[in-house]
Image (tube, helix red, strand yellow):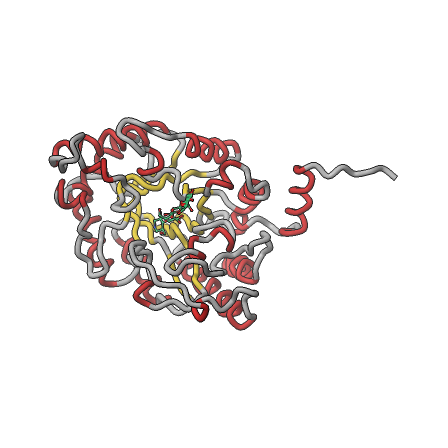
Length: 372
Ligand code: G3I
């Protein structure tokens, strides 16, 4: 009998076949509704996780850089840019006909202190900071012009109560830092879509702060194409009616609506840690990490129902919703294993740690098929 030599490639193909069978890719099921995306991290981009890229090609038609396009990664020091990982992700996506989303140009987090200081460490003037912002946006957006479909131009500029978040951008430049970022991004790539992205912006209070930002841009003739609702959600929150209402309200402004960082946390979590305020963390306790040995069927069922309910709403709005991106390729990669409480075992996505399809995956597919 002929001996079969198990090369890494063959092994990957076999593993994929055993994990995902002959079923349709997630993206194919939602063809004509909206793009289905995933974030990509370092092991996936470099191919160190040999399963990741074939899996992404099968199930997703959009990718977002989870970290490698953030200011501290792509422009860690004045004048120094690190494009290697971002270039690889973009090349992988384009080779495979996958839409690339750029994340993120202006954010209060993961932006090095030097950005706001002169060479002596003194705070920059408004004009100098605007110049630096323009230079960063032109360099990064310019490099991927024609390759990135859309950019998260400004991320998380609004607080829970709807007021503008107190950031160095706001303090040094003033409220128009948002307009200026959108102006620069438009100049740098007039064909890329430009988004405002936030978490909890489905909630009424925060939405009441985001809507005037969009209206202000529109009133001044500054291009903004869409609103990203991150979607860092939970089994018990938010209410589906709130998600439904918020999509409708953003769409009524003429915005494309995207769920940009979706996952559903299944672990007990104090509600003051809902959302994605990464400066907040809580201490680890075993009682907050109850499913280390596996997710009980009853909780799995809740997760499945919640995903089904969510996708019913997203499909209902498929004229406005243009993309749904999951924040993590499978449960093992989710940032929710480490935040807001470090060292937990979470199960927030559609694929398990071995790339197996979870019941939530099938439920989401069923919703799409019922909808056709
Ligand atoms: O790669 C380094 C590793 O070399 C080092 O040993 C280790 C020690 O801390 O850190 C690793 O980097 C971490 C990185 O994730 C990769 O895992 C950073 O510390 C950590 O801060 C970083 O967290 C990211 C977080 O944003 C902050 O940038 C998460 O992966 C990422 O999922 C999360 O994504 C954000 C969105 O960009 C915006 N919306 C909220 C969302 C969740 O916070």
